[in-house]
Image (cartoon, rainbow, N blue to C red; front, side):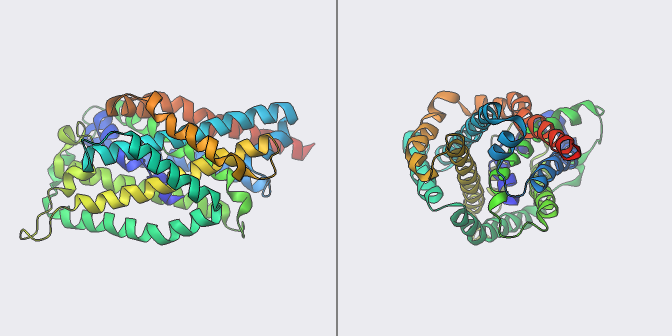
Amino acid sequence: VSTFTVGSALLLIPSGVIFQSKQDAWIAILTAIVLGASLQYVMATLASLHPDKTLVNISEHLLGRVIGKMIGILYAWFFLHLSSLVIRNSADLAKTVFMPETPMLPFYIMSGILICITVYHGIEAIGRSNEFFTPLAISGFWLTVFLVSPLMRGENFLPILAEGFIPIVRGALPMLGFPYAELIVFLMVIPFLNSKKKMKKIFIIAGMLGGFTLLVGTVSSILVLSAPLAGVTAYPAFAIARLIDIAGVLTRFEAIISLTLLITIFIKIAVTFYGGVVALAQVFNLPDYRSIIVPLGIIVVTLPMILEESYVEEQNFAVTTWFPYGLFFGFVIPLILLILSYLRKKV
């Protein structure tokens, strides 16, 4: 959950929130973490009331077979759409930072092959991959923050609340849709946990830890680059990593940030694609979700070529349109299902 929360958000959130909230972006992210925890509470409570049912099963159980399957199809689309958007994020990262003259298509194809193989081996393979890779990603991130700390300037935080609370709200609200509403995909995973005793607590704490990582990345960007510059920089994390130069020997730390981002993005793509594939398989009562991995993989790889034409359009979609869109799937529908669960329990 923590890795998923960081995911592609570490690419887009710092510059987007700083652009909206300026030097008060850290307050906006703290606000988003608290509000995001309330979204997670709704999701986790719904999951705890139906511990052996996925989100699709819960919808069919509470809303009936027809409406439940319609909701299931919507969620399958949402997860697959999200998966394709994150593939686009990873391709933009690779093209912008590593291979600017390479077409996008090879990045899409490689991502598609990788997630199809991973999802074919199931959720346990994704979990074990996460256990192995995440310590590498997190340690690389914190090493970069530590090494760039001498370049931080506290005066970049000033003045605090210069424009009031409105810019803070504008910066915080998009984060509810991206990444917090997206955590609804874990309701396709929770039923397969070996132990669900501390599921709610771990789910919420992990989401907050992921938010804290985004907070550190944003604060570092402000302190090193200043808010005006960080707000218009495509990838602030790379910009500050490039400034590290210790005696002319330890340089090019953007490679470590790249590793961090590619790992967290890979986990996010795998989980969302798994959620979409399993959701569609359950809607149509397929005996094995693996039979539709390849055709859905082709769709997910093709979608990024249609959805956005540029990084600017992609970021604009992430901080504006995605907020109501994601909140509908990550809060409105789960809240309705939660209310129906309590009503049915009383009856």
